[in-house]
Image (cartoon, rainbow, N blue to C red; front, side, top):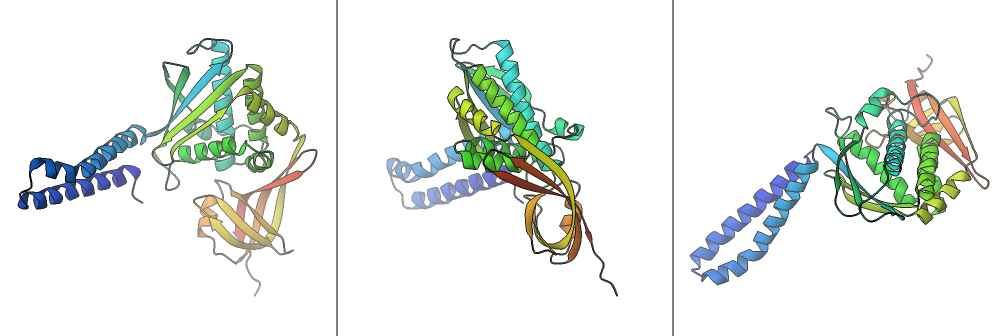
Length: 318
């Protein structure tokens, strides 16, 4: 797979070649300089834009960059209390950790998050920018990636999907149920913090793999999110053993589909430990699967999410 840096360099080389060839043709026509300049202007502008994009990719190719702009209502622009800053940034880190744990471990609220996940998901405070208080964070890429893109960009992609889904009750319920009870708890605590501190937050994300994203949460929106999440009054977890057929699996997105012998179709996430076996598993073969079933209940609905923890072949009897 070609990296974003390689793609950008390839486009620059193509444009430089076009400019060179076009210039040679125009010279043969012996056009005046102003006429040649008119012809080449659009190509030169494109080249300059591509070089700027390349510089941006180089700046973010080894890491993901986040900028959190904080707007406390009772302080002048560019100021924030230490207590508010550490609480908001700490809550944001906890939310990201819980999502990384769901993606690469399991969505369970029980037990500690593995140190390996905490290490590769650790955000670094790089600098504070002028203007409204801007905290610039860096999330460095791991040296080894499991898939085509770094685990850090995959984690932030899920995080921003959650933030964008918070515009509606139904989409928020779907997203948070999918991410599990630990993410629900941390998102609830973080939005409560924004409400209580009366602070609006604007989150920007620059990624060489995912591009640019931006989302804002003001205290009123935080209050609404917190109320929705508070309705999820009960969560339960159980380990389920079943037999069936693996009908589909996407290793890149870590998703699966199993048809049980009872005729039920189950879809969900693949845990990190199960990925190697799933990757080599023959589809439509009888299998024995161990799954984590997480049920999240609210006053009006019930959401169920599944995580595939283990899969093995059921050998046919002679």
